[in-house]
Image (spheres, rainbow, N blue to C red):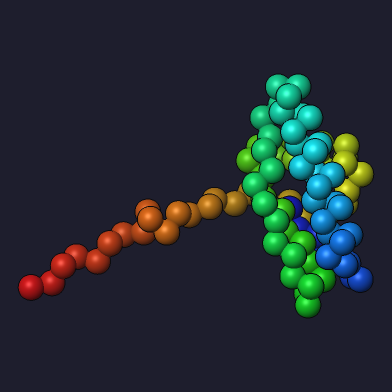
Length: 92
């Protein structure tokens, strides 16, 4: 996950940045680099944007550089599917 603290960001600016990242990831993937854009969350009140990717740290850094985008923090995360949560046992 890549976090960007972006004072003054507008929804339009965020959409343009995300679109450029998506295009860059598609181009990199067509060149055989394992990277896929998974989505983003923009929190206007916090002036922050978080983007999720499937790929190595090096590939994500390269995507940002090629897209001309900046970020403040890159961290590896694990997405947990709610379907995988342990089920409560039936009680008699």
